[in-house]
Image (cartoon, helix red, strand yellow):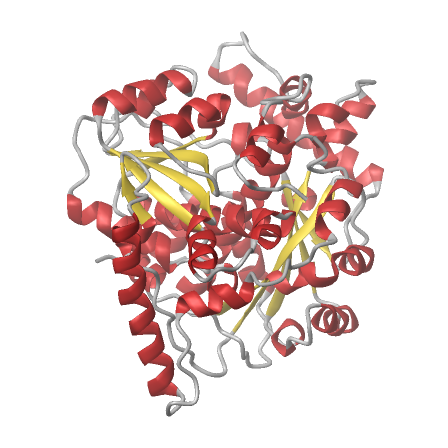
Length: 249
Length: 249
């Protein structure tokens, strides 16, 4: 196994960082890593906002649901879907590209572009000995986040990425069995198959929590998922995304 | 610069592979790498379909717009947004989680989860000396692709990933200037700033094509984007995605 794969397989989210800031050189290496990711038809439909202003970071931490590591880290990135440049070029050329920029395909392209770029940053950061944590919580109050970062139409903040020198270790969370994630040639729908591997997984996850919490917690993955989807999350997002010019059709 | 960052920065899409198949061990390492990526609130809302059946691969190549490297490669993955497992768990528990599974937030979560996993596979593959190419063209005829792969409701194929031993080298495509991709604290909207860096970039891209094609081609990035968005692409997708249970609200 080479070093890169070792780094990838060793991933765990870090939620506690020292005060040490990333150097400018480190930040630039991470941005260059982001840009090296594949991009659909060369569109490069994303932007990265680096938040260094401590007041802004404190506000973002609050908006994300009081996550202290949004405020306290070595560097904080916000990844955005971005078709603003494409809109700008079209308008300057006197063209109306609204329909093409606003459909579901364009939304997918920009979200995927942003995510590929972000994951390159994560792997690059971890290869440098840094820790990372994705912050989907930015979508809790995305309108306020957008205002804070002054993102215009055709720019949609998607998630944050906190990076820094790890202050505390954390453990890995066991993933679903390969048998449930990976399918050969056709999607595996057989319920006996699904039941079998879900049960095995649930048992392992339950034991893991039980051991770690001295029996206080022993919920399975299925139970966690049942809770997580028991209420629609961020129900305002559908409208807000459209307001910003994405996913309209 | 460490090996991992070197690998990341050295990325280029490979569109021509030898006949050498990936070994089972290599495929498993790549799947494990996918699974090690971050996932929103532990949902793991994606699946990977490995297509090894040659007839299916030929059909996919045709559906993707006759891209030969979809058929001829060392291994072919299809990454799918997948909330089917969550729906299954809810139904078994007698719950109706339809609204939570079908909103824009759940769509975003599953698309981002799938993309993060895919980019881990890309980096891992390249670290092993393999080449990769993302295949967004699978969305050209996504209904037919879904039928071919037998993906049910709550499973949406997003893109393919062709992997293999490179047969021909390819060159890197220069990315947008950092000044356009990276913003500090607030989104940079100043038009003089955008104009300046867009022009510099367009000039470089134009010269690059001119040199490579002996003057036959010299289009700028802006011209390529103007062309690319002159017509809505994959306009059926909005409806199809909803039909599959995603992005309904």
